[in-house]
Length: 249
Image (cartoon, rainbow, N blue to C red; front, top):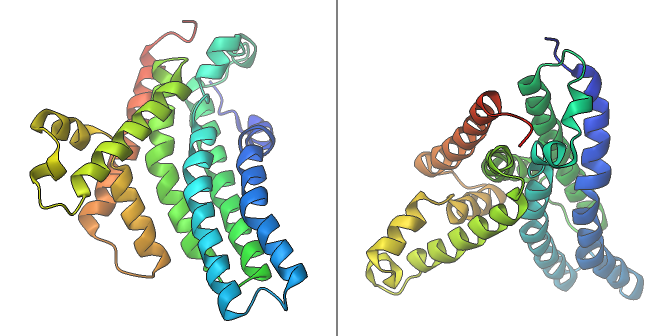
């Protein structure tokens, strides 16, 4: 069984045109366009007020682009091929199935990280300086966690997109409740809901780590390894399921 390196360019093209095009449109509408209009009707986008506005837009863009991009780049990696029967064509030749999907996952992640670096560079060129390498580190950490979860769900079910959104929103809601500074045990959640929140993906911890990355602050090693371990473990479990389970289901 050969490694499908020849498919990498097609996987990259699909990542850019089908998976990352929507986040790019969103960023263009909600961040780039307001900055462009501001620069056209003001002295520029480098004054104190404009700099604050640009920073707010950038942080809003991070909130939109990173989860959306990781979601679109990871879900459907395997489930789309099963749903549409593409696997019969893809693996009609002696191609290593696991290597193909690992490559698709890695190529999509690399495109996602590089794209966000380019967005940060371009946005900074129009406004104020933003650290490109920190932006790419934040994107990589996001993809490790959310991409790993998306890959696992794609190995489990063809409804991985719906499942991903449901799990992400539930984790975000419950973990924000637990982190609320109200002085209540588990933020006021009952113990059974708190237990569910603790086993769901650590999305609030991911947000905390990203904020520290942008602020050039030291990262908590326990939080960092929790996020990396959760995402990597989910991706490895997805690989195990792809290896043992039938593609036609």
